[in-house]
Image (cartoon, rainbow, N blue to C red; front, side, top):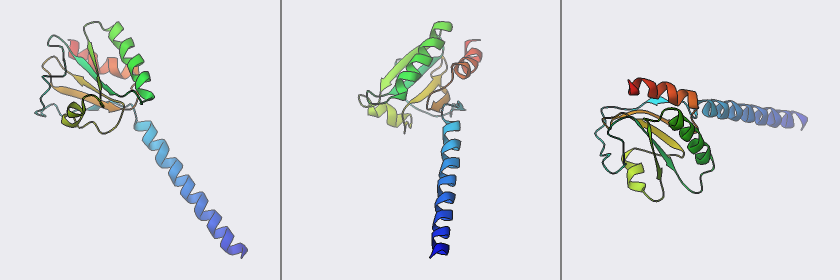
Length: 140
C-alpha cells in the first residue's frame, strides 16, 4: 500500500512540476513583440490608422483586466513619441476587426507602419521599452 502511494505522490509532483514549467514558459512569452506578416492583405480601412506615422492598435474588452495595463503602457509610449497614433478597439464591439486580424486572445497589440501594414504584434502586456524600440525605426 505505501508503494502505491509513493507512486501516486511521485506522479502528482511530476505533473505539477511540468505544469509549472509550461506556465512559466508561456508567461515569459507574453508581451514579447513578434514580427507580423507585413505582406498580409488585410482590410484596415475601418481601424482609424494614421496615414502619417505608425499606429499602435490595441484590442481590449471591458472584462479584460490586463487590458488596462496595456492601455497605460501604450499611452506612456505615445506621450513620449507624439507622432505615434493609438487606436483601442473593443473586441466585443468590433469582432469583425478581431477576426480579420486573427486576434485570438486579449490583450493583443499590433503596430502598423504609416502605409497601414502590420509590422509587429504581441499578446499580453508589452514592455514600454519594447514598443519604443519597435516604433523608432518606423518613425525614421
